[in-house]
Each structure stands twice: as C-alpha cells, then as structure tokens.
Length: 436
Image (cartoon, rainbow, N blue to C red; front, side):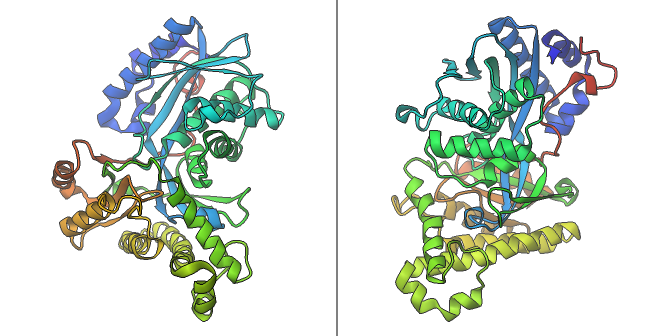
C-alpha cells in the first residue's frame, strides 16, 4: 500500500499525469486530477487511515456478439474510459464500509453475515455482500475495509455500471487481502455470481469479464466457466471514427422477463435439435428443421436461433477485420449485427410498452444522418437504453448536437477504449515517486 499523502503529493506534482492521460485522454486531465484528489482526501478525512490502495474497474462496451454469451457463443467486447474508481484501506474489524460519491448513505456489510437477503435484491449492498461471499466460499482471504468510490459509468447507458462496481469491490479485496493474486477471470466469476444470486439479475458472463480484463477482447464461451479470452491490439482512435453511445432515456426497469426470454427461447429451439445450447448448430440445420423448431419453440425461437448462429460467426469475423486493419469491413459487420438484432433477435422494442421506441428511433435517425458513412447497432441487452455508433470525426459535433436535441443534453457519450493492465495504480511503478 501507498500513503494517501504521497498519492496527493504525486497528483499535485503532476507525477500521475501520464497515467491519467492514458486512462481518460488529455482533455479530461484536469477533471480527473480533481476527481482523484477529492476521493483520496475524502477517505483520509472519513476513515482517518494513512495508507490505501487505489483500484479501477472500467465500464464495458460490446463491439459484437449481441446476446451470444449465454448460449456458449463468441463476443467481442472492450473496457472503456468511464470507470469505477475506489480508494480503500483495511480496518481491524470484519466490517466493510463503502461510501459512493453522490450518495448520502454508506454501505455496511458484516463479513461474517453473508447470506443473501431478499430485501436487498436490486441494491448495491447486495452486490458487496455477494462479492465477499464469493471470496469466502472459495477460501480466499477477506477482511474489513473502508472505501470511497467514484463511479462515472453512466447508469442505464449499457456500459455495465453494476459489473464495474462488482469487479471494483473484488479488486479491493484482492489487493488488500489476497496480494493481488486473484485473476480477472476469478474476479469476473465472483461478480457474476453476486449479480445473479444476490442482486437478482440473470446476466451472462461477458459484462464482468470485460470489466475485469480490460482492453479489446474476443471472448469464446464454448466452455462457459473458463472462456477463452484473446486480446486484440487495435487503435480505434487512428481510424478517423469516434465510437459513441447514445442514451435514449428508456428505463431498464421491469425488463428482466424480456432479457430472460432470449436465452430461454434460444435454448428451447436448440433442444428441438437435440442440444442444450445453440452453440454448434448451423443455419442450414435450422432451415432443414424449421417446421419442428417452430412447433417446439415458436417463430421467434427460430429467428433468435438464426441470429445467435450468424452473430457468433460475425463476432469472429470482426476480429479478423481488426487484425487486418480492415475498418470498412468491420463497419459493415457492425451494421449487419444491428440489422440482425432488430429483425431476428428482436431486442430493440419492449413488448410491455409499444409506444416507447427510443432504440429504433435512435437507430433510424443515425442511419438517416450518417447515410453511407459509419455504422450503428444496439448497445448491450436491448429493449431500452442505448445504441452504439461509429461516427466520422468530422461529423461528431454535428451528430452530437442533433441527437442531444432529440433525446437529452449529454445523450451522446464518446468512448475511449481502455488499455489492459490498469486495474491498480501503484506509486512505486511511477518513475521518480517515493511510496513512503
């Protein structure tokens, strides 16, 4: 651990500037220096501790493979610049206390009382309790700590703010009590368990794994508990396009049944073909057995099964496009993914509120605005929330003004892809900084 005073002196002297620019970009340096300063000072004043760890867990964006992780498919994902930042120090008692910026109350969890609580479902305290329980169940060391957290991953923007929070709590425990030995896969596994069992959301595995690993990742879920992860070295900032998400303002509340229906219907269609999951089937097999699949899984089950097969293949083709610097080919695949999600997967419109169609509206307006330039698709789980677009740099400001005017100020959020290896800032790794 490093002293809070030394962190603050390093910030003031500019010793962290290069790290912050790499994390957030040069234009955000001043804001991020103040953010880090405020968080460190807040913990020092509240807890009274002198030494602490500084950990980071980014949000994530899905670049390809919409709803493919839960049927053992392939996903292309990336960590982004928006993150969950925490400064934490150990305490003698077995109690975890967390204060989050912007929230008046602190979270308190007794490390000896880790049973799930129904009344906590859907809350942050459930995620903290669930992550600690995941460590304990595996025999990993845990202990109490005080932590101040600043999260700038927008809630409801499809960037996995909850997964970033779970991974952040796991990383605090990892750094304070496990000597940093817990892997990104282990932290992601614990985070998903906390969200499934304690928070009450039946999410897949992609969110937590992308947040924990960072960088651009091709994730193959053929063996879902130990997915294959391949890092992709590609610089989107050198392409002439800006990756953005557009928050349409739709709520994800009460959409759990819609999300749950997708893997259930894909699985039901696959079982007609004699498989438990859709992985391994071909479109030709579906066409040859379409009558039986319609009878056993319905028309939408057929369409969603075709989407899964083609979308999983498309995610792999996107990797090849990036590896060969074929940005035009990559953008074509992005648009194909968006079209498939709309027509086949059908996760752009919620059946519970047919008049609210922010996702199709944003996609349609983006298509009309960009024409044959760039690409657009749904972002994340769907039904409400955000879309994703690749906008030529020269059109970003004009596009942002247009879409912000339609939806809300700040609806368009430019994204930077987070490089891997930035999960903990250690002063001893910075040249010329003493960590005493």
